[in-house]
Length: 190
Image (cartoon, rainbow, N blue to C red; front, top):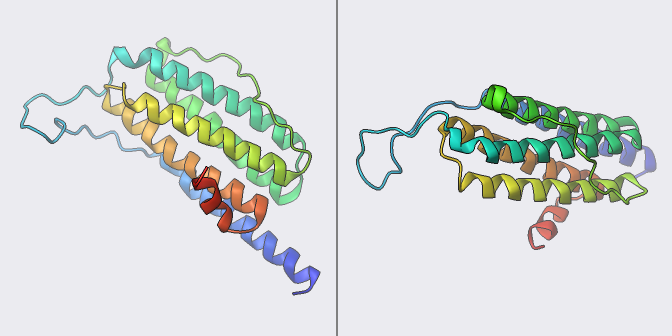
């Protein structure tokens, strides 16, 4: 394969990744708000609450983490160009949307303050993308842990939809950094 064909192939692949992220990002905006009755182990006549005040501290902690991701992507976007920059700007926009959605869920109880950028040491896009993927995985883990204590179905549905999109961020970052799908397999083993 000549260099021009490789460059065009890489650009098409990154555009495809960006396109899939756009579709995934829309999932947060249309996350289901339906309540499910009970936990499926026994019949009940009481549905879980759509919003539970006990979730406030947990959701505010998730807002703080998302604000850190917003600040981290702002830093990463500044050092990228072309399709790489477009992909990072899109992920940045997703994290802004997550902050807004989580804050809207809590209303006046939300605590939205400026985030602090997480460390990015990479000098190349590939290095930065791998570091961003690690930060995304850590963010996913916090969201998954939060689901264990969330009582309200609205918060649970929203957090679950965010986790799904952030997992796509990890995949897109790793594939765009290495140019191969094998990086996903290797990352899953860590």
